Image (spheres, helix red, strand yellow):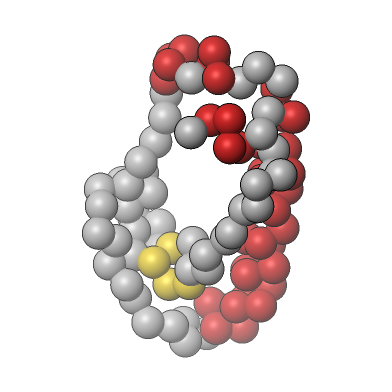
Length: 91
């Protein structure tokens, strides 16, 4: 998602959004790479519209999200192989 920055954390209205599908063989590393590539591609594709404010605003249906470093303690036991941990193993 690309959204307007407001005073909250990840709470601004969305201006562009695209769904990403991961396959059963994706790892934390490959999923991160896909996410980085997709957001870069989306920004490049939509830059002219962003620059000229040619977009519709979609309010978010949630209050945004953020994670503290201490939150990782709840899932550390699931990440057995670092970046090579399969996403399907986290469910």
